[in-house]
Image (tube, rainbow, N blue to C red; front, side, top):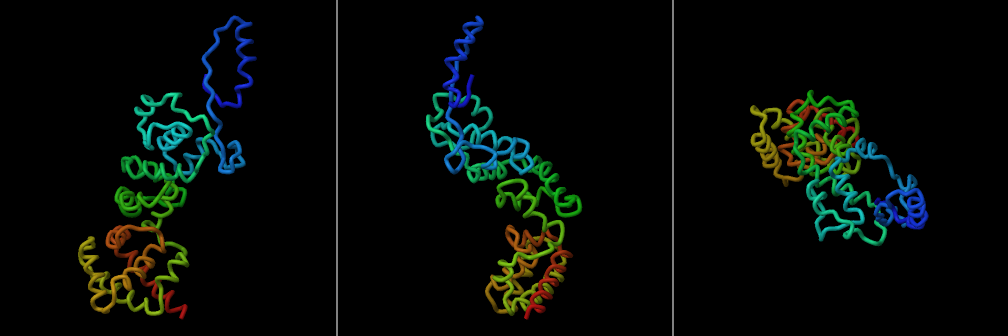
Length: 272
């Protein structure tokens, strides 16, 4: 029987009761309690939730299991364990005597590692449900596997991955104001005008021609690459985390890219 060390005081009484009943006395193991960040016993007050809530929040089962196994137990400096490794290596002798602290940021980091290494097809199946929660049907946009490969290093949970991937499938309602303030300077509309025309003229909507169109706009304007790339990225993504610019535009598609650039130009000119 393995249980929390808050049951140590009960153990002698329970052993006596079992012996009085003529039952076999099991071996008891008591492990330290799990604490919240404030040093008190973990409870709902700390946001502790059911396993199903973690699933709804976009955590992978294997990441949560890995985190719980490592909570108060260690095997050298190893952080990530396969299920077989957990079974083979776990031993009560490795459990710390002091209480463990439940650290949500550590769980998020661990989940991100699993997201980066997981089978893309499996992630696509799981992510579809979270995109559905946002009202998005991934069948209406770019290949979901390609989006996952482009974005998954930028998210810690499936919920986050769905949120930062939404712009590939639909126009955003608002642009991140901090990103806009940095990217949409007074003359940014000129850069967007030029790159919009270049992109609209691309015959083969692939990464190399897209990159060439952006580079051509930079050369024609006689400015640094960032003067064109930064407002272009914000115009197309709304400020969401995104991969290389040419890959981002390729996945968004020509029609949506040009439409969003036009909206950004209008926004810049209306705020003068």
